[in-house]
Image 1 (cartoon, rainbow, N blue to C red):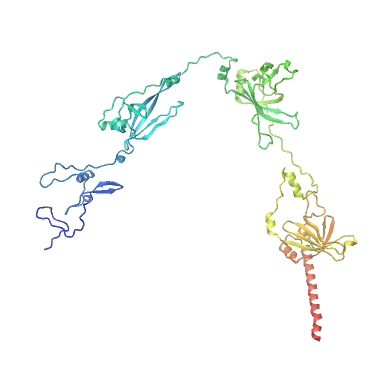
Image 2 (cartoon, helix red, strand yellow):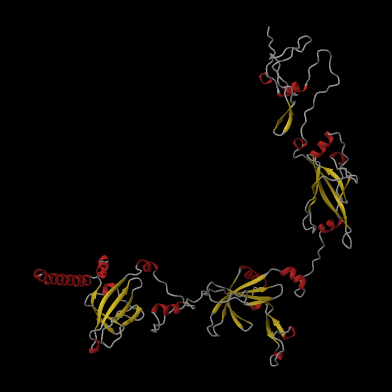
Length: 562
């Protein structure tokens, strides 16, 4: 008879059998790890029982089944207690902070205005790790560096190294931290609920004592109204500060060399009767951008005549030498005023200046008018005539800029026509009989439109051959110096006369490359130029064939006789 011990039997006396198929005898694990935390395992499901997930029970009932232990068969175990569910502190008290309000008293030495200061603070207690921090709310214009006084950390409460706990905190107590005694006066609603839920009775809230120096600063100072006096500088500053009369004027500087009329703005400061003149700067005017034309100062209107004939040892006029300074009545729109020996025509003012004259000087009439403040147009630049030194382009660069730059070249034309040269054979057309028989080669460079002339050496002619003309551009006869017209490939035809700086050359022959190149540009080249080249090459081809045929004919009889 075989006994099935796969599922086991009830644990009763006489029904215990050893499982022969069992191979693992280790102690079963009672904890499971989920997301890094140790959690108790659910109880195993017995034979014939359904799993808990299939039962329609609530979450609280399921937790109760896990924690409850069934009674034993023979009585109950009075010494065994159900295990409690453990929740880590950083998960249970995450983002839960106790907040207490308080202050500390700071002694002030060597100050007649205050002897101590009351500085309010906020004490934070983080429940997750029992750390604390102390901050001071910022006060405007306090002059004291405020903010976080003690950074977040665990603080000791005595010399034995014991740490502060939230059970040690209460309202109406002193807290000694790093030699400073903080008085806790009150707490927020969350802190009160938490402490009361833990069975701690909070003391009565206190009020933060007032700082006597701060109260004295807040109190308004008594002001005494004194009748306005123009001679009293302090009262004048309080009444007329930031009140400025602004006039728009033209500085007439036409008496000086190259002088002109320049627009300026004249400021009159009522607080101290000073005058400032600023010039209008325009872009590319050629003038140095000085900030002001006349710095702010009191301008004397009349100087004592006693100091005029005697030379002064200083450049500045002392107040004893000045009889009167300029006042607002001396500046009238529509009239001319002389300041420091310079004439200024006042043609307009702003709205504040108009209101000031209407209220304080109604007898003065302002007569604004329109003036042309535009700068004169630039004189048209005239390029001087070409003097013949150097090339025309190089000479023109000296007129365009102070530091001449090399003239720009057609780079694309240089790259496309590099090493492309049109060569012509020419003879010198001269009345001198000694020039008979001189032969030249005229080369035209397509990359930069320049001409070079080379003379072929002739034996016993008495003339040394070589380079006759350096590489240069040659203008056509009759063209102006300011706007010259240079020779081009279309001007060179067989039989044409080319005048080069007073010398006349007659073209007699050309390379075959000249004809092929000009035929590729037939729509830009005159027809008579192409026809002269075709006739020349056609005649030369016929002559070559005749000479070759005669040479072959002359050799035939010799072969036959032999």
